[in-house]
Length: 502
Picture 1 (cartoon, rainbow, N blue to C red):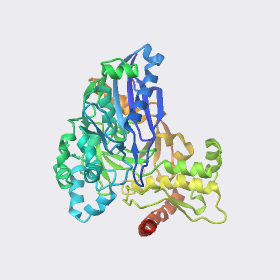
Picture 2 (tube, helix red, strand yellow):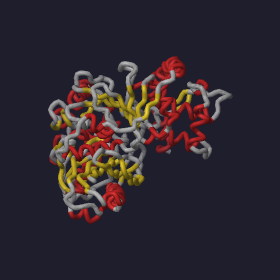
Picture 3 (cartoon, rainbow, N blue to C red):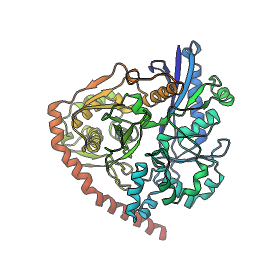
Picture 4 (cartoon, helix red, strand yellow):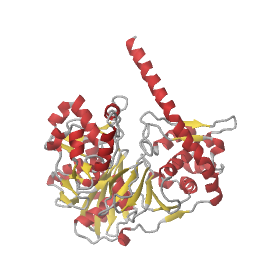
């Protein structure tokens, strides 16, 4: 039997997944990644550690009895977007990678915001407003504060592009990743406006050639084969930005399809055939499927809100017990609202100083109410980003959070949409495997890529009505808290300065 491997280089985990020729998931190897925070607002990963994680997962698949009795046709990659991954000519890192969650460039945004026309110009070209996650702004920060790292570097990469370089020895960028803040998406080339108006034009030599997601990027090198146990010469596809690969992997490829990835960012996307319907409140990126785009709402913090709440409020209860307790409560959590902004927010509004919090606690509030409020807060955040789009319709859900049936029901009830979930747990890796097949010239149709055995959750009409009545309060809270969050940050900054002066 023929097989494909999809590698998903995520923020919290690295996964390599074996798929058969029908793109059915057969085996998963996963390793946790570590994120470093050397200073407030700084989020980094050690590149060599990440490479070893990839090698480890590939070695696990190489030892699979399935591969022993079959043929590995190709490898594809998906990965966390944005950030800055710098290496020398041989692929050795020159510094730890800056992640998409790094906010050190926020000061640059305050400086650049004095020119309102600039942000609009950049949005028209590359689909992104000025956000700390943008690789363009992070490169600008490095140029201003750590120019030595750029001088030492031969190549600038995104996460999966650097891993692919280590696998093949061939240096390339890929268009869905580069399209997050560096490309003119109308023409598929580096944006002159971005490079010149942000003052990073001198960094052009760091950018390797561009490939489309389904392009063949190279072959597994002898060195990488020896490390992983996989056959040397195995074709490797360019791959795609994780959200673009996930949309492909769950079958969200029709104009108007809506999906949310219930992971670190709880990213919501709307598929569109052209750029004419792009919302001014969002950003847009290229889809991994040919000639399509994604209206993208990537929250700053998704499931980390659940991680925090469960670790502090669940008192070591099992997830099944927790689900039963939360499901027994009525929609609205007894009037408690949760704002899911642990580390600022970037969609559908931008505020690096926004923070999470509860509103409406009373003497009758229990831990179960608080826990349900956190799940509802994230569901309302998804509802928030979809508020400018037609109601109803299907909502494709994937990611680690899709394993929580009670949360899926809350999302269906909040949004009023039928929720569709694939039983295959690794949609990003699945999308990468599909791209590997396409790179080899295999005919992949819309029907053949649709996951089998999908499960649906229908919204409960009564619960949806209750959520509709409460949603305006959630929206009003985040709008009126904007100046409060800023005042809080200003006060804390001044307190820190006062302490430093003592």
